[in-house]
Image 1: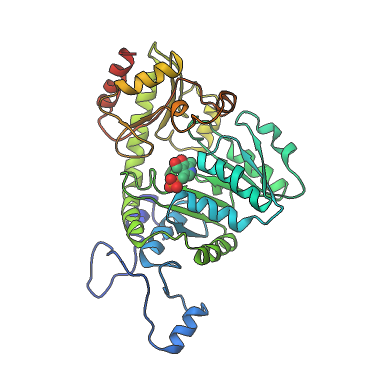
Image 2: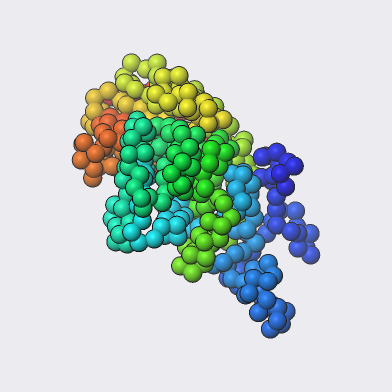
Length: 390
Ligand SMILES: Cc1ncc(COP(=O)(O)O)c(C=O)c1O
């Protein structure tokens, strides 16, 4: 399919038509598939034939969804999961053995951090962390049993950028697997495989769905690694449902146009916030003031839809700001058509000590905004009136 552009492939890469000659791909809501005879069944289970057996293993809808992401991420193979966290857990569950060690950026999604600190140690798997602004210390953290280098970029919720080229070079030099969560960027904005990533993970719940409807996850990458992840998952059961795959594959048809508009709106909102007297700091990858602006420009096509900004006056003002919001939503999700604002210090990251919070860039007044597809003037007006009232 790669003779076509991203947008065309996202629409035209579709499951073979049935005898009903449908134009849009139907939903294959079936848990299992039938065989012609005993020999067909034996050969299919022996993988001598490429056939769907059972929807925990594969289904035409999940296959179509995965095929699109594989192509968008320039990967060799992939597997779809019920959630982004299922993709994260299954990747580490497959690629790490008891006694292995991992090096990860400290600024990773909360549940991923909980997996590293509370669950992987049960299997004697330890993780060492580097801060976003201390990538020069990564090599010092590598041990003889280190297997994986892991990062998200842009990070959540600080919107910091890590240099994928540098991470790729370090991973190669030390023979580590480079695993990247590309959720904030989407494959439309950034392809970590271009910089040497071995596995790329997405929470499809975010911009890939883009309309706040279904949960999903996907891991794509080198075929031999994905094969192992597939076998782990086929036996442990975190598969994506055919219904969600059907929804998400349709979502991919509009990913390019949606992401373009999200990013256009986000840049305008970031410009507005930067000029406002009650805002201390604005972090958006494509603002020249972003500390890693040059790196963002090198590896991202657009700046994404997430902005982190600091309302003057700490926790109290940050919360007051949220209370004044009229149009935007107060919600835990991101990457929706609807603009969403959250205050990490009093919600998602409230259990962290102040020191730990500051270490990952979450100051008291920090607000994370996921810019949606409403008219940009309406988004700006809502933020403006909320700022006027704090
Ligand atoms: C960067 C990142 N990775 C993974 C996840 C987990 O995805 P899910 O909620 O689909 O399990 C999230 C969710 O917010 C996320 O932001």
